[in-house]
Amino acid sequence: MTTQPDRRGATRRRALLLGAGAAIAPAGGLAQAPALPRAGTGPAAAPTLSTQSLAALTARANAGTVGVISGGIDGTYVRIAADLSAVLDDGEALRVLAILGKGSLQNLADIMLLRGVDIGIVQSDALAFARRQRLLPGLETQIQYIAKLYDEEVHILARPGIGSLSELAGQAVNVDVRGSGTAMTAGLLFETLGIAIRPEHDVQDTALTRLGAGEIAAQVFVAGKPARLFAGVPPGSGLRFLPVPATPALLETYLPSRLAAADYPALVPEGTAVETIAVGAVMAVYAWAPGTERHRKVARFVEALNTNFGRFLVPPRHPKWREVNLAAQVPGWTRFDAAAGPPQRQRRSREDRQDPS
Image (cartoon, rainbow, N blue to C red):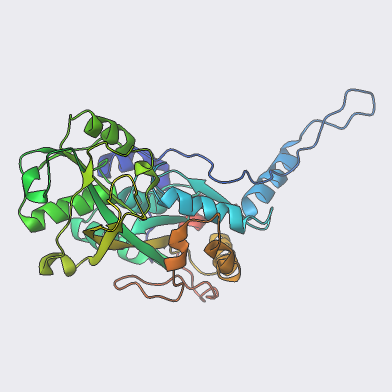
């Protein structure tokens, strides 16, 4: 029998493992909440809300709700999650809550430990990294995937006067908050290239302000292009993307890519492109036991995603949806089986222990 993690101590353990917790915020349109009984004022007024009716409302509100943890407010993950919320919302049958997250490694922990988080968007290399580092017990069996999404490009934006990665040696470079996929990728990237930087861990919008003020040499951001973070950089700022060489060592893990003027007209001259590398993004999910209510809810989410996929391919949805192949395999990951029925002898699931409703 597999023992599931006790989520009641989630906040404490997340702090110990990966840093502070994720902030929850709605993304996309607000879903319609169940109507509450209204108490009148006259003699024939309806009775106040009873414990029984509140329990029924709670059950209704949670019956079709699926939580999707994403990324920071300026990244691509949160826009993908907002699209999921906007397109797949079906009243009480299915409600997708888009949640701001703190990056791939933290998202894996949140899927494992946080109540109400079923799905998360993470980098495809995060699961193997977390396993190697033994960040969470049971990760290999408790985390699966729904779909490979798109490729995320490595952006390294540098201050004026810096033209190559080698010039960052010994310099202050922001690599995003601890526990983020960007911090993980940046560490692997600079280690592979033999460049010793001084990493800093500001949130990305703060880092961009510091970069413009000359307080740091560069910032690293892994996100699907075009990343909204850089949309406000004015032409003539002097900031520039540094090329990332697609060395054989890096290509063992990453894919070659490029940043073009069409992606960032204020940062890439017309008719040119900046070579870089990319990593796949994955829609990860907790491996709910077949036959449980949480498995059924995620299965409804998967069915809705497949049925409505064409709606993600047209504006105003993020252009990265056009790179998604729902049938693509993710090496090293196990696909979530939405059609699976309950086994004869179910192991105790996270739901059985802590989400009895």
